[in-house]
Image 1 (tube, one colour):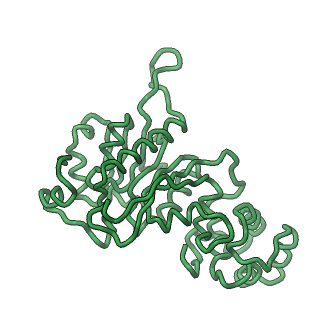
Image 2 (cartoon, one colour; image 1 turned 60 degrees about the vertical axis):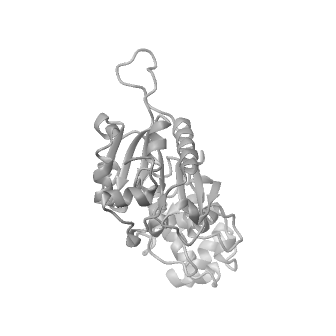
Image 3 (cartoon, helix red, strand yellow; image 1 turned 120 degrees about the vertical axis):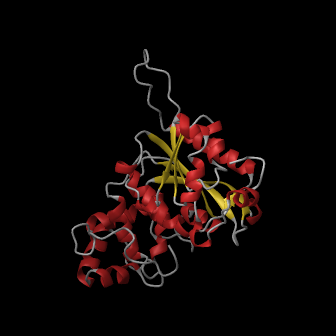
Length: 309
C-alpha cells in the first residue's frame, strides 16, 4: 500500500471503500500514528521480551511482538514495524488483509496478517505466542466488547495502546463518583492503570467520524484481583443494570433481598450507595462473595447498563 497517498486515494486505487457497518475510519494523521507506535514499543519493551533461542549468554533481545487490531490500510502497522516491533495484525476485511499479505514484511515474517473477526479469535489457539503489547485504532462499533475481549483473553497481563472514542477513553480513566464511571471503568480499572496519552479530532480520519478520539494507554497493575475478569464483569453487569437504583436494589433483583443484605453487611458495603460510588475493589469483593450463586456463571457481557457501558 503506497504511503504517499491518503486513505481516500489508496482505497480508490484498490477498488475498496470504507464499510460503515464495520465502523471503518482510517487514520491519516502520520504523527499520531508515529506517537502510538512509540507508545506501543515502549510498553512492549517494559513488558519484557524473550531471548533469541540458541544465542550465547542471556541472548540478544528479539524484536518484541505486538498484536495490532484492525490495521486497515496499515497507517499504524508501518510505524510499528519502523519502531522495531514484529506485528501480528488481525483484520476482518478480507480485501485489506489480502493487501497486507503483499507487504515485504509479510514475506519476511516481520508481519503476520490474520484474516479474522478479533472478537471470535481464541488468543491461546489462534494467535502466536510471545505477544508483548496489544494496540490498534479500534473500530468504534466494537471498542467496548473488544476491551472486554482483551481483558479476558490475556487476563490483564499485557499492556494496551488503543485509539478509541474520547467518550470511551474518559470512561476507562474515570474515577468513582462521576457519570463516566461504569462497568468499563471497574473492569479495566481492576487490572490496569489507565491514562489518556493524547486526543484527536475528526479531521485525523477518513471518513471523518462524528466524534473526537483519544489514545488510551492501559498498563497492567502489579497487584491483581483474586476474581476472574468474567466473574467481575458479571457482577458489574448486575450492579450497573440500573444506575438510578441503589446497590442493594440491583443486587436484590438479581438474587434475593436477604442474600443482598447479608453480603453487603458482611463486607461493610453501604447498600444505599449508587453503583457509580463504589471503587473497583468493592466490586471485586462482591464478585467473590456471590461467586457460587446461580446467575454468576454467565458471560461478562450479560446484564446491561442502563446508561451505557
